[in-house]
Image (tube, rainbow, N blue to C red):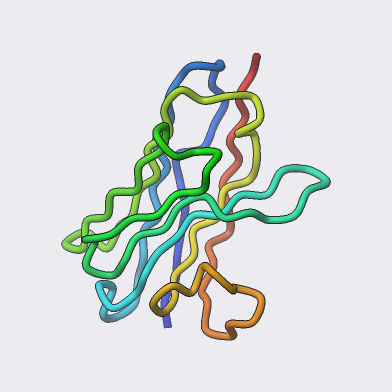
Length: 125
């Protein structure tokens, strides 16, 4: 079992930065790959970024690559989403998720994905 709690959302102007944090409780945090997803009003949830359990490989969607990073600190059971050069289209509820290797490629079919409650990010133009 993995419990995830996001924090750090808020309102920021376009071009600004925010750092989201996802704190996990439960055993064997480093055994879980972690990912961030987001869902804008009226749109489907979409993948943003992911990182492997040991933190050696990260992945990004095309829309955020080069602007977002996803560091994780296994000593603190926390994964972050550092968001730079924010755009109004980044406005969404951001969700942290954890699961097995590459779980983010097919979350609908995976019954062993853990989700946080989400945190709102609003980017004003």
